[in-house]
Image 1 (spheres, helix red, strand yellow):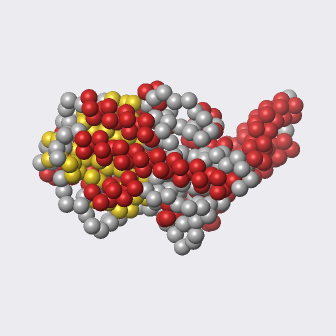
Image 2 (cartoon, helix red, strand yellow; image 1 turned 180 degrees about the vertical axis):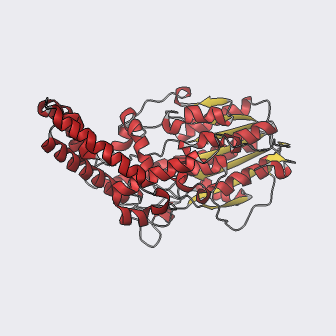
Image 3 (cartoon, helix red, strand yellow; image 1 turned 90 degrees about the horizontal axis):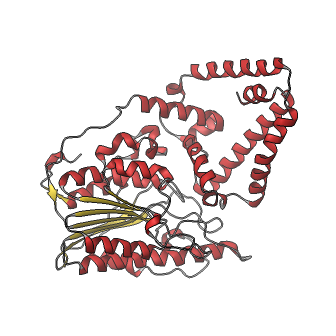
Length: 449
């Protein structure tokens, strides 16, 4: 199919063959790099990242080795030049390419995708079908599953009212327990304590490990589970990037349900809201106030490229102090997003040190938010969790252990208002969604989905 497309475009068979081999090689190399960094090969939904790559290249370039960056830039420059120089005016090769392309499209449409890829199992299917085959069939299965779903999910009205004055949910970027990252092996540098997390666990009514599926990326999977309450096993092929179809599920979201119960719903994220389509999705879910990076004053610098977590904590504190009705705040942090600078010859250790420094600030944010709610004199609920573990090449690499910490701390006018849980409990992001509703909406009965 690639060959037919290049031939139809250029009319040069040799060039078409070379470009087909080059693009296939780039796809395989890119997939292998992604596998080594994130523990997953290239997925069909990664094509969506192409637009984000063009908008924010620094967000992705750090994960590509220097030779790969040179090859990428060189290829983007050379491609139009090669097409212009080798373009043939003879119509026959172009027509042959069109015919080849049409034949391939017909053949691909005839493949019984549901029989070849009945359920999502990328490790099995990439070995059985190859990278191009798995990309194409998974895209087909995702599209077919989407076509079988209703345009929007409808749920019964929520019969409840706010159980808290303030509910704060913080999705903290790359927040993990340092010791967990080096379980079974010694850390190359001293690991910091997290006094904020330790204090939070001592006060929490619920705490433990959040079983997230992504490693080093795929924030949207964790975010979708907490916001929409749907288990990944139930999503089928949508689970790889549930935000691509989340607009159909807005009635299931926390702001939709809590908004019906009487909460004012605020979404805060100190970064570009175009990522994952948040600028469109969050208002559709029911967030009536959206706070993006424009609300913060920040000058990027090498040691702090993104807006600090403590600055976001102060913004949340201002929202709490100004609120006059029950308020639900969902915040997504940004400070601890890679890349972590590694300019020294001992790059991996330097990158790890940068990560741990930012992690301390995230822990400080947790402490600040606990102080904010304790001092507010109102009933509140603070939920804090990590979206995924960091990927730091040479230091923290993908494995089967992917859990991040979560804490759920209820407050009344005098402070915490429930007996702390002495033992940790593992939850999925979807289970955390239902726990938040349990503690936030009273007399909802069976009407909460």
